Image 1 (tube, rainbow, N blue to C red):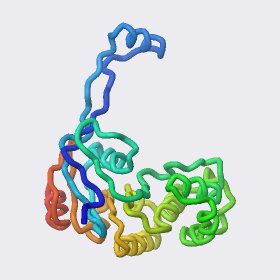
Image 2 (cartoon, one colour):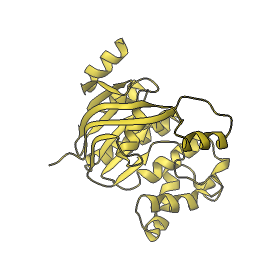
Image 3 (cartoon, rainbow, N blue to C red):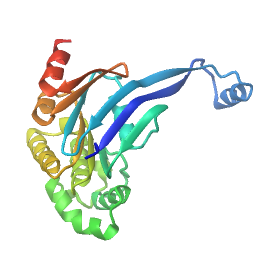
Length: 242
């Protein structure tokens, strides 16, 4: 069977303006005259990795290593500057707390909107509202605007929607580090169920106990490059030793 995710010699660059300008008008004039001085910042530089169906790949590294950029490439939020990103299956992504949420809308309304982003029908999502908020322990807050939620409540809601039904690929970026121990245990149990159903999971985390508990392999990124890729204990051990 072909891998769920393939990254082949992937590079992604952000263009950074080197000079400072005092206004948008000044910037526009410089751009028109061809006087905008830019440099390329390579957020990812030559990354090769595959993720099989039913596998959990952990992604670790310091802040600024390229972890979130990698997730956005897999989620098709960003295109690569060079190389190929092949994704086989529908993607459910939790790559930022509240990503895709309208903070003025209620949990019920956001569930319907977020479900639409995941390609699910309105009828299906209406039938799933109660199970979702019950799992997220937000039943009493289902009709409250989520601007009134704590970050942990937003995390529970987002994870509950993204993981409510089996997706081909689940992307989780630091969500499991938010909330109490009971939430983390519930989330890990649900992820194991998704894995058993054949979902491919990419998990970004600074929490090494979580990486050890859930991941079969780990990718260690540093300065946009893959410093190490291999079995979890081997890579995490090397990372902790520095």
